[in-house]
Image (tube, rainbow, N blue to C red; front, side):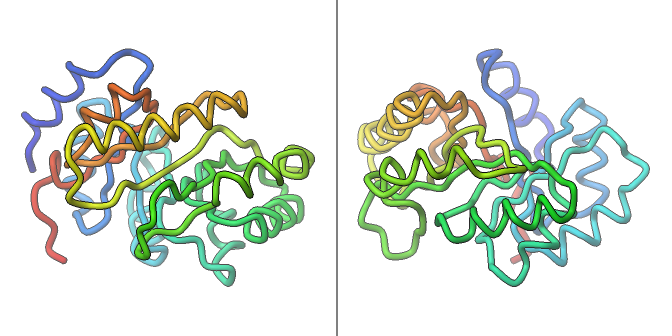
Amino acid sequence: MEISNYLQIKKKLPHNVNLLAVSKGFSIQEIKIINNEGQNDFGESRFQEAIEKKFLLNQFKNIKWHFIGRVQSNKIRKIVQNFEYIHSVDSYEKLLKISNVSFEENKNPLIMLQVKLSDDPTKGGFNPKVLIEKWDQIQKLRCIRIKGLMTINPKGLSSNENIKLFKKCRNLADSLKLHDCSMGMSGDWEEAVEAGSTWLRLGSIIFGNRSY
């Protein structure tokens, strides 16, 4: 657990940038340690692991759970039931299903729409043109709150290349009048802050190396 890294990063962040501690692969004890330092937002991408942690930490009422993994259609109801934030909605079809399930479950999750800004076959997300074309329909969907956009840059980019892609996301969010951009991870968070990120998804830089 790199608690000193966490505290140093928190000191550096502008007041409008939120830190999401990506706790997948890390223990309940490590989550408790960082929660004691004031960290309330935790991101998980594996549903079963997340549910077990949520159950074991049920008495920690200040913890907010964010789902940041790939949204599988057959898991949407459970994700809606258990997560306040969903950072990784990558298609209109899934967003529509989330809306319908949220209505049935009397939920109102906060949504980040994942956008794909580069030709990386390992990444999913809305094509920006498709998102703009669908935007009027998206705004009419019930029982969801679209808060912003989310993106994941390809690995191996230079600092300038990272900033350029992050700024594309920021500009697209601004054009849609969305406040938040969930962008920046352990290897590129400083570039993301420079480009206008409001949510950083940080795991290994604050928790150390994962067991998987």
